[in-house]
Image (cartoon, rainbow, N blue to C red; front, side, top):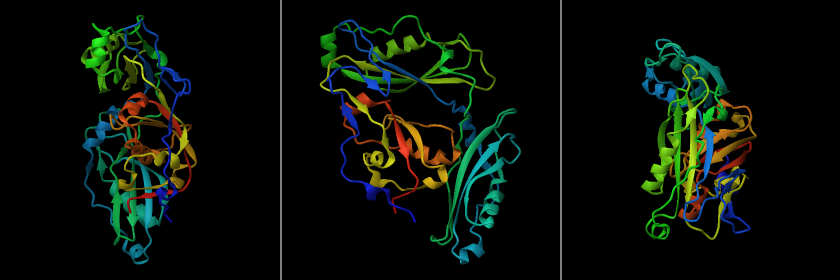
Length: 360
């Protein structure tokens, strides 16, 4: 029986807290983000993290499906026996069907046979020799909705291992510096606090990275200072065939003082969802029991600026991909000033067993 998560909620206080000492340092889960700088120079802060190279996910866009859509087996529909299946697919040849691995099954053999038949028609014609792409897809045979069969789009499963590490990144010997021509005047006319988050993609040693600005709300002068600094980054490790080193880094601009600094706190899923904006408009169903519960995840605030950054603690489980993808999209109820300060901060969320059903 599905349980509505929102029934557990009551009006709750925000899950962030001001620093007790009223100080001006920014901190997030052990990452010290304050750089001491001369008077008149904006504070700069940098938090760097490796992220999966998602370039292979684009290959899923060329998916070709020639088989007829899954149908509800008549014998099972007469008995009103539904089913739910989660399948991992591994594509390794452009003209061959993917290898299928059943991650979770709830139903009869006929449900599984129908899904397997449909998946055997899948092809990735744009796959290059030597490339391998993994994905996960879910199928729901709904006996209560006149035998309808629902399925989501392929969810890319990134590689869990890489030969790269943070030690492969060589940063400039100099510190990032930035001065305003007139500090007092700039504080009046320009935004006093802001963030710039950049993604760097390294494919060759001793070559500047490809840089993409994911989010910024500072000013052009600050942006130019950061981009100039990033152009001096280098990858010191040998390039691995078919792999890239991808890094995201946050730069915090704080040109003026403020009354409080805020940080996020570790929490559990129920309390976390109690602070999600417009949760009553969500329409999702998740069986946490099928995901190796209980487990813990890392959640980094990004929305609505960009997708939240999520990750699994411990052994990765592909059964959680759809749930984690949903967690990437949630927006917290935060005012602009607080959001500006906690953007990019990460917390640990405890995920219990049970079921989530929103939007019935």
